[in-house]
Length: 146
Image (cartoon, rainbow, N blue to C red; front, side, top):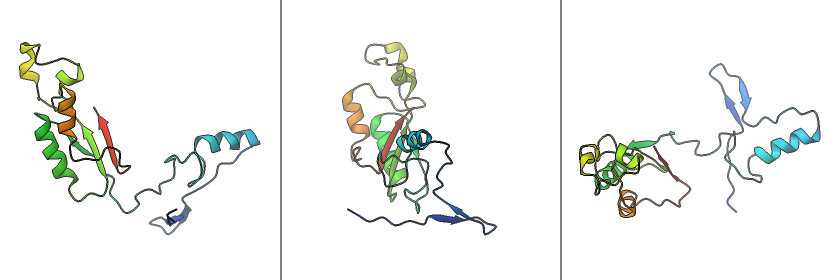
C-alpha cells in the first residue's frame, strides 16, 4: 500500500486553525452508524471522496469545457486545455442535434445545427475519435457530458 500523508489542519487568514476532519455529534449509535455508512472518515470503507478535501491538494480544480464542430476539432481543444495538467477533467458540450438524439445523415434539414455550439456526435466512432488519447479508466480522468 502507498502511504499518503496530508495536512489535517488548515490555517485561516486570521491565524485560526481549523481541523479538516470533524466528526459529527450524535445522540445514539444509529446516528453515527448512518454517518459512517454514508461518509465515514478518510481512508476507511466505503472509500468515497466524501466531504473532506484531501485529494489533489496542490492542484488547481479545473474542468476543461469544450465542444464545437466535429470530434477531431474538439479533441484538439481538449488536448490543448489539458496539456501539462496532472488530472484530465473533460466536460463535453454537445450540439443540439446530438443532445436530441437526431441522426444528421437522415435529416438534411438539420445540417445547419450540426456542430453548432457543441460537438457533433452521431456514431460510436465519433466518440472514439473524441476521447482518443485520453485514458477514460484512469482515476485522474473525469468526463461530464452536457
